[in-house]
Length: 467
Image 1 (cartoon, rainbow, N blue to C red):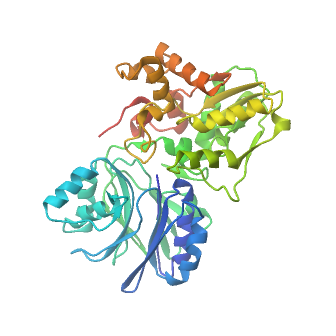
Image 2: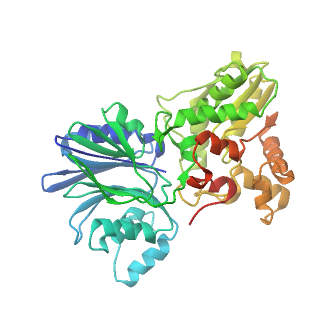
Image 3: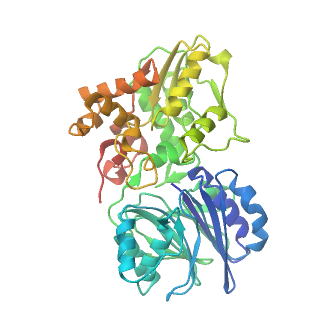
């Protein structure tokens, strides 16, 4: 997915920029980047962070990156930030985007005799494409709106300019941007948890399609928010850090509520509740508290040298990281009936291995309660579940086994409680060797988040969305 952070201050902001960007490391594993404006000059640094921490890669660069305004990114795709020379002036740009019509937009650029200099793996850089669309207009504000209107998918961005930092949230608000403030400084961030230890207070949550210009003295709204919003529900279920808020709704509180909702619809006899570390823990605590059943940790995570298994592109690496960083505790597993809460089941490959380990260590029963419905549709708006085939999703794989490649009944399979939905879930249960498997109902997830359903993107579960 990726995350953004930008800071503008009366004094040097490089320390805030460094740590603020680092607080987005849970959102991607591909590349990190920083850009600062110091006097007349722009400076930047980009590193591959697939095999190391953001901090260790950038710490030695910081003395060379002083400035009173800067932007940073954790990117799950292309190298960022980019420094662009244009008729609008020189600017640096970072994006969190998914451009479904990137080939079409690139082809139009070629017809106009334009070119792209940033190619990643032979593909057009989404960030450079956004910069090109912005530069096609006479002001930054008009250019950002032009980019938002042209893109099919989603795009939130920060622009570092001579005048300050432009922050622009996706036109449907699928990804968040939060504004923070402290004496003499303002910041924009994907994750509000980046503010706490840097002394910022949340000032406001930007609306969908809103554009603001930040300076050390404050920020000015350059475009009002759009009426419609569809923020990604998965931000609360999985992506988001527990200490973060979106739309003034805390991630950990929602996960606790999800767990309570799962518990209210459950009566299975078990010995204790556990969460698949780390994102399943909040859900499991809510479940355990609601039913008054002990919460325990039969798996613990080893993080010093296995920091993330978020989205390595190689399946063998994903499997290795998932196996090596979770250590089972046999004395807590042997002879026990264990119920696990998990954020979701995407492919189920790693979960299947974890379940087998539990049985190998003597578990009597293994029950699973995902905090969201079955993932049935691939995400069209964020870089999630898009690098794999649709049939890699556990739900679609089960449907293919039951129905073949015929998608006529996909809506029935995605609707909770239908005969086909129950058959799909049981197919997944059998493949994972689970004693029981019950998914969260969509209406309970929506209620746990606390926003009207029309303000949430639930496409990956029910296929619905605004375009």
